[in-house]
Length: 235
Image 1 (cartoon, rainbow, N blue to C red):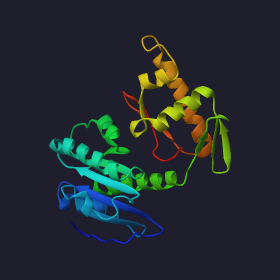
Image 2: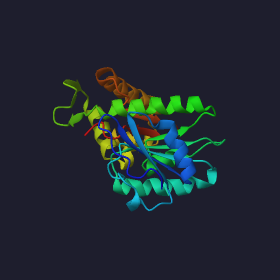
Image 3: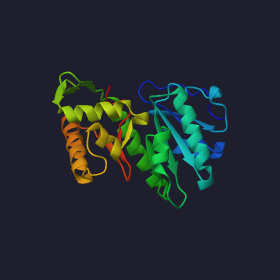
């Protein structure tokens, strides 16, 4: 464990960085630490009860340096979610090959990112993501099922009954994720014969309405699987 006891900065985000080794955790810390972001670094082999701020961190970044560590990281994310339901969890990796992103999301991760080789590009990429996280944290929307509206930022967005059902289902889904078939069930479509293109059009229209009104991408496409609601944005 290193840099334990780092004080939270009121103007910034509290971030925890984890890696298989403390050296990896420290390298992740150096990618995101700044005057506005306070970061503590740990090995993910450390007992979580010994990790300061695990329940209150605004973001948690976890590095994978070899493919063989993937399953261990998935288990680690699941354990974190038992103690912290609201923080943004980022899984980052730099080795060649692909990663099972849907497993990351279902375990509780919010971002699964392959880092570029260049150090400067790594810093730039993560900086942009943390800026997005900070912006998203300021948007708090409330779904009024009776009035078929979203409220927030002193604005009201009317949604259709079907759109309300989709949002409600996403809010209550495990880790805010629904498969394409899950959405079809919500819309009471025939699972054998529904048109995936029509489903995508419905979701695209809903995403666009929210983005136009609140300037936020509240619903993300999970390639080859379905859709994911941005954590903490809609209640």
